[in-house]
Amino acid sequence: MEIMDIGKIFLLGSIQGLTSEKSEIKKLFEKIKPDAVALPVSNEELEGLKKLSDGEEQEILLSGYEEVYARKLAAYGEVKVPPPSLTEAFELAKKNNLPVYAVDMNDKEYTGVFIKNISTIQLILYSLKIKKLRKKRFKSKTSEDFIFEWDKIVNKLKGFRALEKKREEHISKKLSELSEKHNRILAVVELQRLKGISEILSRNIQKTLYGDSIYRSNI
Image 1 (cartoon, rainbow, N blue to C red):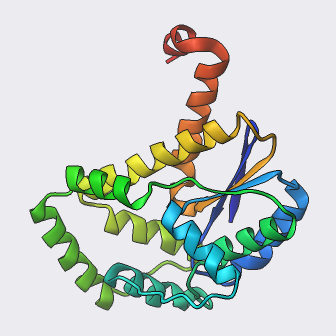
Image 2: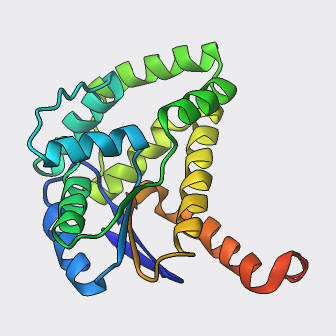
Image 3: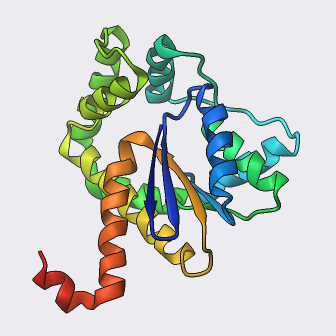
């Protein structure tokens, strides 16, 4: 788990799925004392978290990608769905009467970006890659190393890299907007997306502070 302080936003990179992340979320929540929480989920997924928190039974179906990921990640510790880092952050916000925001694309937006970037050929190649991953033995010694090894393999195809880049841009934009009305935002993001999101946020802050002309002259 890694945290970055960017302006009013505390970016927390977590390994989604690991139960051990739960205790770390609580420690950092108490240390940061945020006035809002942002999660890398869609509006639809946030509604699911709310219903789960209220005690409503939710049918959780894993895609082939998610099923293989969970099985491989389990080599490094107990795994649960929904990701404990997200459910814990949501529960802490609820307990402290803080707003929780979904900062990832909603289902319609994601579908549009997916169709634009992923060709039929790439989709077929991706499916074959997931099948190969079922048999692959990862050499990573830690869960952190595994996450980046997994991400590198899965997003080797250009279209899928572009898709994740669009997610980083969307999440960064949403966080920038939230920083205009909150002073201490705890944003729990996927560890493998932390660097990209932090770099985009930093550039956005520079542009806001100094304007486009000065920002370009410093490139």
